[in-house]
Image 1 (cartoon, one colour):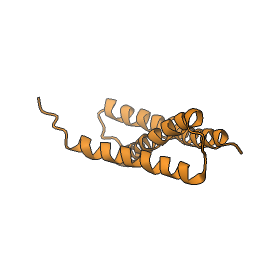
Image 2 (cartoon, helix red, strand yellow; image 1 turned 120 degrees about the vertical axis):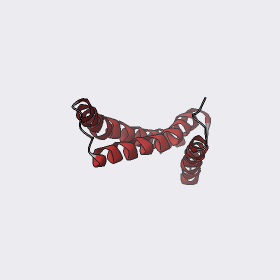
Image 3 (tube, helix red, strand yellow; image 1 turned 45 degrees about the vertical axis):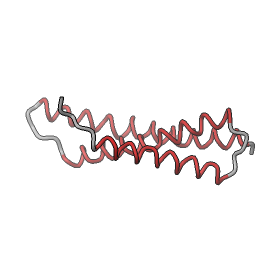
Image 4 (spheres, helix red, strand yellow; image 1 turned 180 degrees about the vertical axis):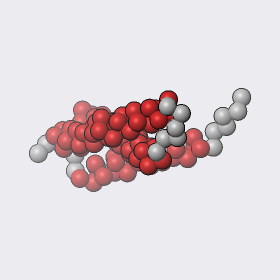
Length: 108
């Protein structure tokens, strides 16, 4: 397989996982959570946890997905370790941003 094909396949894999998370986990659970809140009940904590976890997974996959899309057209190599490096670098960027965002003050 060509390096282009490997990068596209990696991006397609991550995109498919993200699509599944949104359509079959996050949105159905959000609908149930919103319905519970509108009816004056507390939402099921398990639904909130599951939707939050899958949303966080999508965030972690989004940066490596962007790296894979960019690499497919600009990076002439597609060895397995290049892809592993892109995934780990992407995860590291998101992990760092989550850490920085936890320290941001929300007070005006």
